[in-house]
Image 1 (cartoon, rainbow, N blue to C red):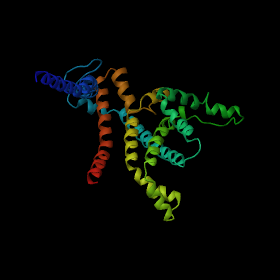
Image 2 (cartoon, rainbow, N blue to C red):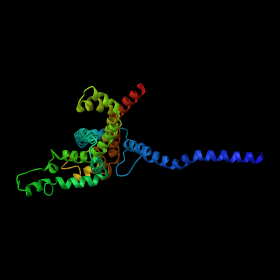
Image 3 (cartoon, helix red, strand yellow):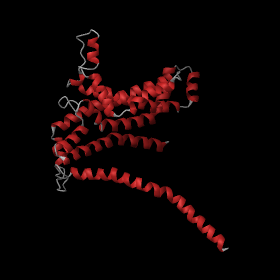
Image 4 (tube, rainbow, N blue to C red):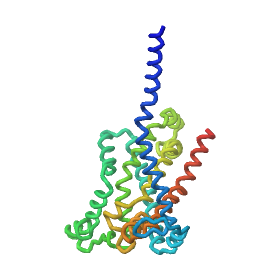
Length: 303
């Protein structure tokens, strides 16, 4: 009786340890993630409310840094540039990604090869992408020089050094890098559409474009939602691509909020101002993405 009791006791302890083991293993990672993500967010908010300059300081300044921020013309320039870059980048990436996904959804021969080709840019870092596109768009080395060497001596394509057009060179490189990833998202969504619905529409005499427009694409709403959130975050925090291609120039023509934050916090010794700009970027992400999350949550709860 005693031996049976001891066996049962050991079995109970073993079961409890087995249940606790995953939590014990994951707890350091969880605590580190909480500290380095949310802890530094809180610290950044605190710094934005202080008079920190070259080094962090705990001298309270209230909302003064935010007032200085919105009185700064460079900040407004970066916001305008972000608006142009964000709208074109998100819109073109989603349009091209959806178009490529619909083409691949036709079960063409060599689909796996095309998927790799379209996804390959996403495997490259933004620094590598930026350097490659900087060479291609450089008037003295890239497309312009190539066409002129072919005999078209008056051909001009100098967007990279043109203050009016430089922001669009960033859009070209960013869309090239992200559209393959968006294509993969949409292709997964397309493959999840019920074939019975498509066959029913075909029996009713609907053409293939009509089926995609009226039946398939509306059913991709969750995929549109996921792509929009991902691309919005990437657009707002864009930094390395700009640094690799233009460094924010010419002048401030491609200067984005992330460049502003880095410049003021680490180059100009105004940590509090840089922290205030970082907090505004976080708020922008929340304001842009929050309503979509609420709408999607309500839609799911209604279903």
